[in-house]
Length: 135
Image (tube, rainbow, N blue to C red; front, side, top):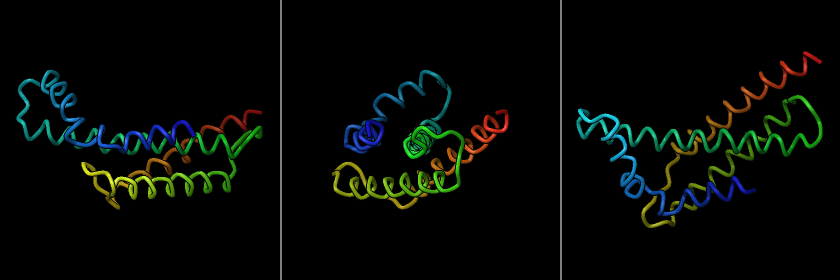
């Protein structure tokens, strides 16, 4: 629940493109002093989109942990439920952003969020399946 609340906070105007560009662009300019402005803006965009992927990667793992309870391993029903819950939350998050003046809703972001959640489940399946086979 705390991670979902953090994602909700990241969806406010405080983390809109204009706000994050105030510290990401100067950092990129310091890191890549010879890069043209277009490159810096493209990198800023990619960093913001990577944030979507990473947020929902971790949300999906946390939801999986909650669904597993005290059980071990990975089950398809848990993985699918974690993916559906994470993707559903992504859709509600984009709906929330529709009402934030400096933000906007985008179906592409929900797809990116869902991709992060799906990759998390694939990683969890590989990792937890490997550990389960050792036992």
